[in-house]
Amino acid sequence: MTTDAPTDAETDLAVELRNVDKAFYGVKANDNVNFRLARGEVHALLGENGAGKSTLCSILAGLYRPDAGEMFLNGAPTVFKSPKDALASGVGMIYQHFRLVPNLTVAENFALGHPSTGIRLDQKKLQEEAAELGDRYGLPIDPSARIWQLSVGEQQRVEILKLLYRNVDVLILDEPTAVLTPQESKQLFKTMRQMADEGRSVIFVSHKLREVKEVSDSVTVLRHGRNVGGVATADAEAEDLARMMVGRDLVLPARTDTTQPGSVVLAVTDLRVEGDRGLEVVSGVSFEVRAGEIVGIAGVSGNGQRELALGLNGLRTPTAGRVFITNFDVTKASVLAHIYAGMSYVPQNRLGVGLAPGLTTEENLALKAFRQPPYSRGRRLVPSAFRSEGARQIEQYDVRGVRPGLPIRLLSGGNLQKALIAREIEMGPKVLILHSPTRGLDVGATQTVRQLALAERARGVGVLLISEDLDELLALSDRLLVMYEGEIVGQMNTEDATAERLGLLMAGKRQGEQT
Ligand SMILES: Nc1ncnc2c1ncn2[C@@H]1O[C@H](COP(=O)(O)OP(=O)(O)OP(=O)(O)O)[C@@H](O)[C@H]1O
Ligand SMILES: [Mg+2]
Image (cartoon, rainbow, N blue to C red; front, side, top):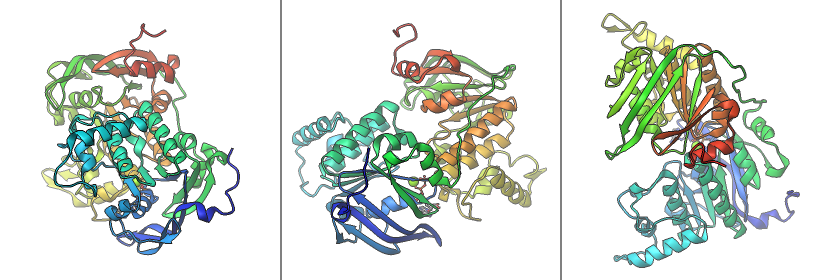
C-alpha cells in the first residue's frame, strides 16, 4: 500500500512543471499544466487520445519549447533548448516512433551522438558495453545485429539501453507497450522497476489501465490538455482511472450473444505469401469466416499476420493457395476487385497503408467510394457530397478534432482510427478485416471501435480480427485461431479459450503438446 506523499516532497522531485502552456494552430495541447515527478517512481500519464500526453512528454524531453510556464530539474529552474540538451541533463525519451539508424549495428547506434565518441569507434569495446548493459537490465540484445534485422520490440530495447548508456535519471516512455507482446511488456516493466529502485524516475504513457495498475506508483490524468488530477496508483481502481480520463463511466463492450453464423463469406485454402525479403512467411493457411461471426487470429506480431492480411486483400499476390470472397475467386485479383467483391480492410499501419496523410478527413473518407454516387454523377465529382457525407460520417463515428482544410495526419491516433473504420464500414462490406484495431486507442475510442465491430457482426458481416490483445480477442471473437511462424497452430471456440492456453500456442507450443 502506498501511504500519503511525504511532506518534504519538494526535495524529492526530479522534475516539476508549473503552469505550462503549449498550443498548436491556436488549439491548446497543454493548458496551464502542473506536473510533479518524484525521484525513484514510475509515474503513469493517462488521458484520451489528443489529451496532450505526448506534448507534455516532448516538452520535458526538450523537443518542444512551452509557450508559457516553468520547468524545474532537481529543484533548479531549467530551459531545454533541444532533446540533446535534455539528454545532457539526464532526461531522455522513447518516442512513439523510433529514431534509430537502420543500417548501423546496435553498438554503433549506442555510440551515435555520445559525447565521448571520437572519430574512431572501438567496435569491440562498444559491443561489450552494450551487451553488459543489456544483461544488467534484463534486456538482452545482440550488439552486432543491424537495426533493420531486429523486431520492433528489440529495437525498443536498443532505444532504452541507449538512454541508459547515457545514464539518464529521467526516462520518458511514450506508449512503449503499444508495439510489444505481453511477454515483452512484462520484461519492460521489470526494467522500469529496476530503474526506479536505482533512484531514477520513469514516466510511462499507456492506454492500458491494467498495465498502469501493474507497474506505476502514481498517476497523473490529462483531459483536454489540462491536468485533472493525480492519485497514488494503489488508491485507484482501473474504473476510477477510466472515469477520471473521460469524465463518465465506461464499460468495454463484449460479445454476449451467440448467433448462428450464416454462409461462408471468406474461404482461404492453403495460402502461401512471401514477406518483404522474399521469404515465405505465410505457409499454408486455411480457414473460413462465416457471415455474422468474428474470427480472431491471435499471435505474436511478426508471425505472418501482416502478410496474411496483405495476401487476403490483394495488396500482395499469394504464391499459392486460394482466397474466395463469397463465391468469387479473388486470389490473384487487384485490390479494387477485392473491394468490389465486398472486402474492407483496416490495416495496422493507419497512416502508411490505410489513410492518405496529406489529404483532408473528408477526402480520406471518400477515398474508396468516390467513383460511386453520391460522390460522383457520371464522370463528374460532386463537391457538395464530399462535404455532406464527410460531415455525416464525422458525426456518426465520433471523429474528433477535424479542422476544415487541414490534413488528416493532424488528428490524434484514436480519431484517425475512427475515420478509417468509418470509411471501411461505409463501403458495406461482406468481409471486414481488422488488424489491431484498438492499438494505441484510449478507452473511449476503444469502446466505440468494439461497438462498431460487434454491430457489423450483428449486420451479418464476417469479421476477421487479427490482434495481439488477448483481452480483446476473448471479448469479441466467436472462434479463435492462433498463428505461429506462418501457420495456424491451434483453433478453438472462445468459450474454451483462456489467456494462458492462447499464450502457450502463441509461443509455439502446438495443440496436443500442451500439458
Ligand atoms: N505537431 C503538431 N501539430 C499540430 N497539432 C498537434 C501537434 N502535436 C499535437 N497536436 C495536437 O495537440 C493535441 C494533443 O496531442 P498529443 O499528441 O499531445 O495527444 P496524446 O495525448 O499524446 O494523444 P494519443 O493518445 O493519441 O497519442 C491534439 O489535438 C493534437 O492533434
Ligand atoms: Mg501520444
